[in-house]
Length: 144
Image 1 (spheres, rainbow, N blue to C red):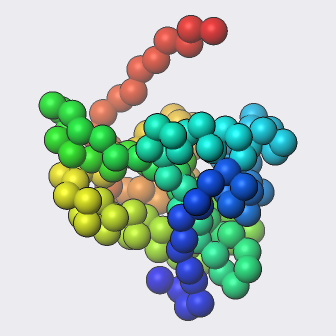
Image 2: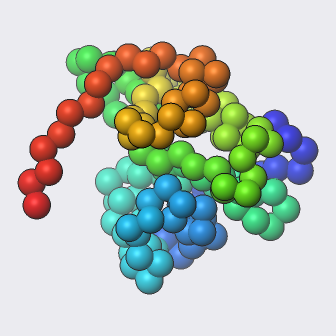
């Protein structure tokens, strides 16, 4: 992990506001005004937001939750993982992903999972470099 980094969990939506400028880069449709409320709603269902700070600035963040299924056993699912565009290539994503793997181990998980959009080729190269396996295709119906 690069020097002088701190990873902390947002305690609530207001706390999560520190991560908004970075999260918005991955989720451009989110609204800054409603972001804290949305995080609070997600946290009610077990969502957690890890924020990686370098000095006083969030340079990467990850939203995740724990689950259990027949297919995967106990797992940590990464819903959101993003490094600030200006800070990429400095090891922040690797540091946060390593931290997530350790959280999964500490919570007795068998696996760590995430989905990535088909056009996010840079992210895919990063995940493969980090030792992740391209294990499935994800299909969806949009109902709205």
